[in-house]
Image (cartoon, rainbow, N blue to C red):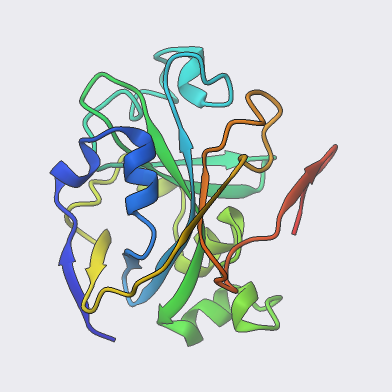
Length: 201
């Protein structure tokens, strides 16, 4: 599949909600695997207590407070790695969680990485699933996504779609904030819900 140009740093150097919306339909590429971004969540600075940056500047959150256009990869529940893209100006915290992808390249490789996925729709339909399928690990924390092996590209041909907005999934604080963005009707979005003990997908 042909892709368009890599997103430049200026794309990420904007308000978090705007970037979270605009990432829909773009293509996440890591090596030979790629998927259209169909679901995102915005995590803000300031009063957003669900955001890691709410704890302030720490060794873990340093990348969030750094320049835009970098990856923030962390582990949740000791087993799921999650990919966020750092946005906003240098020094202002903000990031976008990539929640689901529609696989478009390297599908055989993604299936080998996710043997439990029986359907194509299950390969990357959640933040922990997509990092496994795409081979994204904590070694990429801090990686510059405007160059190198992990990047986001524009599609070669733009597809028209509608965007739905819902509360975020899997957070206990600020849980009712409408900061989850999905491509309306796309069958690759996650259907995750949260209950005590972890995610149900």
